[in-house]
Image (cartoon, rainbow, N blue to C red; front, side):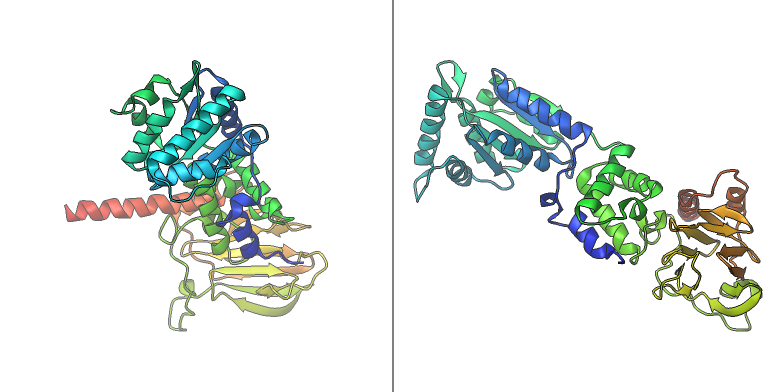
Length: 419
C-alpha cells in the first residue's frame, strides 16, 4: 500500500509531533543528567539555555514527568507570565485550589507550602520554561521565591530555561537572592549528522511509516541538518516542508530548497516549444521500446516525471523487473537528472548501474526488458560537465550547490554593476 507522505509528515513533524514520541540524543541526555544533578545539589537550581527550537521544552517536560513520581513539581511556561498567573499555576499543580485571592495571599500560600514540604519531606520543584520572556514583575517575584529557606535549606528547587539572553538574568539588578544561589548553567548542543538521521527516521517510524530510510536518504538528512543547524524544532519545520515539496515521492535534496535558493524555479510546468524553435530547445522526450519494438514516446511537460510499474507513474513500464515506484527524472534548465528510488532490481544507464546521474542525448535507460532512449536533453553547462567527469557517483547536493554558487555570482555581479 502506498504511504501517504503528507499525512505521515504532518503526524511526525507537525504541531502535535512532540506528543508522538521523544527522540533521545546526546545533548538531550546530558542536559537531563545535568538538571537532575543540579536539583540534588545544595543550591538546588539549574539553568538550561539554547536557541528557539533547541528542544528545551521537551527536556524539561520529561524532567517534570520523571520527578513527579516522588516530588511535588510545577511546570510553567513563562511567556508573558504575570505574577498572579505564576502563583495560581504553581498552587494548582501543587494540589491547592485558588479563588480570587490577592497576589499577597497567593504568595503566602506558596511560601507556606514550600516551607512545610522542605521541613517534612523535600523541597518542591518549580520549572519555568522561557523565563527570559516573563514580565519584569514576575522576575522580581521569582527572586522572592528563590530566597525561601527552611533550617538552612532552600525551600524551592528551580529549573529555568531560555535563550542566551537569560545569562544576563544571573547578573541583573534586583535579583540578589537568585544570584546568591549561584545557579549553574547548561548550554544545549545541536544534533550531529548521525543523530539527525536517527531523529528523522525515528519520527517517521513513530508516525507509522515503513519506509523512513527511503523517504529520508542520507544526503537529504545531511541537507536538512545544514538548513536547521541541527536544532530539533527547526528540523521539524524543514522536514515537513521537504515532504510537501516532494509531491508524494521519496524526497531528494532538491526538495529541501525553496525556489531561487540554489536551483532554478521549476515550480511551473515546462512549456512545449513551437516547431520553429531550435532542436536544442525542444522539450526532452523518452522513446520507449521493448525487445527492439517501439511502444511509444513520452514528452516532458513537468519538472518531475515518475517512472514505474504502477498506474500512478507518469511513464508506466509494465515489466516484472520494474518496481511500482522505480525512478524519478528531474528536469532543469541545464540538466536532466535521474534518481533510482531504491528499486528492487536497480536502474542502468548505458549498461552501467546507477543510483543518481545526469542524462545526455541518446542515453539508454534500461529497466528490465524495456529501454528508454533520451532525446532533447538540456545542454549541459561547463560546470556540470566537470561534475560528470568525477569518478564518484554524481550527487544531487553537488548539482544544487553549483546552482547556489551561480546565483551568488549573479547577485554579486549585479551589485558590482550598480556600483
